[in-house]
Length: 298
Image 1 (cartoon, rainbow, N blue to C red):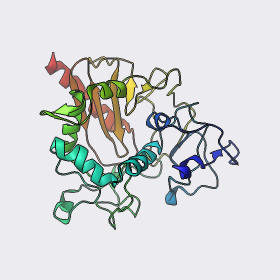
Image 2: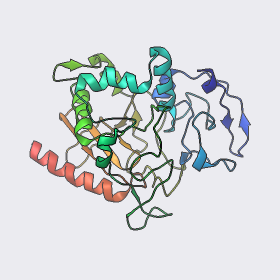
Image 3: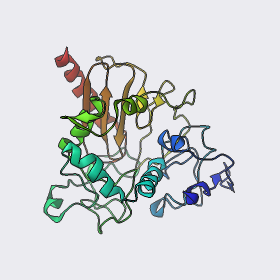
Image 4: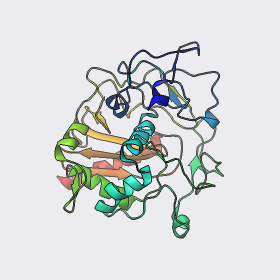
């Protein structure tokens, strides 16, 4: 992907420099390639318009392999999958993931018959702290469904799905790559995905910039003990209600979260559709649900 390797690195003063290190697939999967998001970065770029950003020209934040920053890395992974397979990402997902697992209500472009099932979006105002309200949306964050069909499929987001479909993914992962006899990943692959892949690199988000409308921060979600595998954050701090250290987890932009506790044999998820990400109300509700879940599991 030559267009990826030519993207410059942004300095603290907003200036740009050419990168020295190569970018590997491992860097992308572990979010150590230097790519961030306009609303989650190490440093703000005063010249950057976050309302019309494109991941292909958003500057990197550091040399690959030196730090961690959650960002557009998986968008690039999606482009690599398309390049290697010769298929669109939508077609690849449908053939190798959705069809084998019986996932029937997950789309980049929702069919007209299912658009009425899409929930509306909400936010909490310009500071992210107000009362939850429904929003009208725009081209980038439409209220119910996009104004036009997607033709450039993203590895980092854009799928519409249902709790039922996503639970099939969680069951597959908890069973090390298979569900109901249909295998989509080797067991050895899943084991690699859920172990520390970044060594001593820290996930501590202290000092990162977060756009308050879109993301509260990562406090409570990750800390200095957290690590990253090939698809998930690894939480090395056990929860008081029983969730074990080593649980892998992550979430979606609009306050959807999941975790896989392999030691306890438990997968759980929660779904909402509002900003900002990592909001206390949703996190607290998920924790209370988990307390009940682990109490019943005993």
